Image (tube, rainbow, N blue to C red; front, top):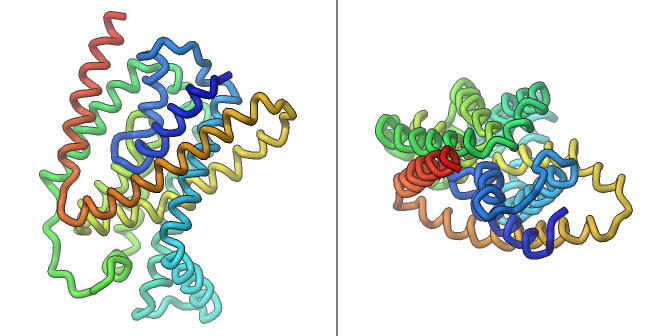
Length: 285
């Protein structure tokens, strides 16, 4: 069970760290250990709480990019009706790129769900993964593919120029975020950089991808909420979800502007320092 204060802290943490490339699950695992909170992170309630806060984040992203989603969904339906994806139909192409990129993480998440859940109870391992997440981001900046001259005016049009094989590569890299400590946004952003996308396009693609990925997880997990009639259980979940949504809104607003001119290096350094410090701290305690 969570107190209302803990629900607010966890919700705020989720809304920020899910979108910043620093791993929301990683922070959710190490925070109770740092603060001495006795929380069973493998308990169905806590996992449902995390899904609810993730869902709030996904809803915020969906409505933040609502104009884009209307065009993308219309493009997918249009391609299905015409039975082809026309070369000049960027919205249809982007829609199917999102579908393809979502598949690897979705399949692996279902196949190895219990394995990944068991990692929630190992803060020391997660601290190490946070460090590796930082190295991943640093590596992306060092070896990222040189961008070609951009001819498309809109970010969605530039993203739609990805090939199907590049989308699969990004999807496979995104799957590493199933391990607590690796960031989904960070992994997707890294994949985008490595195939030649600009920072702003990579983070936009990551935010668009978050909706189907988190939405699919919610479809599988949120029905657990219907199985309980305890209001005292539902209220912390609601508080956490609202807090997460508010934090997510300000996070996406900041990051879409930030990555127009900045890189992931500060976040990489943060993860490396935090992961190293926590690894040492948890080893001796």
